[in-house]
Image 1: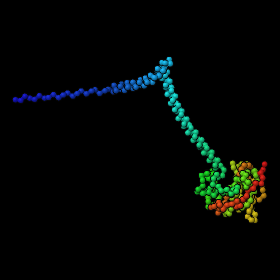
Image 2 (image 1 turned 90 degrees about the vertical axis):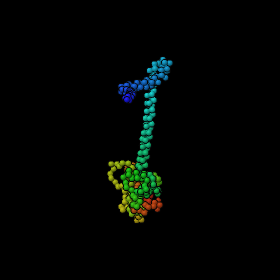
Image 3 (image 1 turned 90 degrees about the horizontal axis):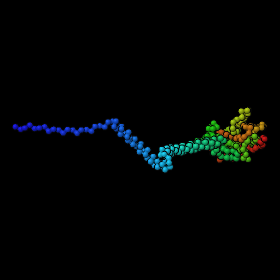
Image 4 (image 1 turned 45 degrees about the horizontal axis):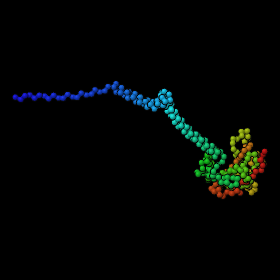
Length: 275
């Protein structure tokens, strides 16, 4: 009779290592941080301690000096960056100031560009066209004027007399001659600066329908501070420069200023000035 088989014992499972506790992990992390800080302080003190011992000073002062120099370098870098920003802001402010000043100077008087000179007169054929330059548009915007388009007419101005002297409000001038062919025209006078509130309102211009003419169609206009017989245009200011503006409406010369010559515009002669 066969003997019963013995059961083979199974090997016991290997014991597992106990999981590290949370407290142990935190302790190792804290020790690592303390060790790192100690090594860093040692590197800072080691080269400075020898110098301090040779000079008879404690090593703590060297560490303080190192910290001070580090702070000083950081402050220096900050100041250099700040100074660069200041220079940039200064350059921007200077450029803006010069730009505004030049724009004010260019638009304070008449149109700076695009004129055609005919003796003391200057024609402006494109101030109201689509191709007008930016300065002409700025002058129109500053004056609040709507310029004449090419098909409507043309503006002709004068700031000097026939001798080239600047027109002055204290002087008397004689305008004599004719105007270029046009359906209608106006002649006005203006001065720079604010109006004198104490000055009574006076005539500032003539139209082609109210001017007194000679038999041949020519006319004479007196411009000055003193009352004159006939066509008299008073000075708009007590003193200072003045400017004449002749506006021609529905004129063929608007399409081509080459047809204008000196004889087609009035002569400007200075007769005398008031002291």
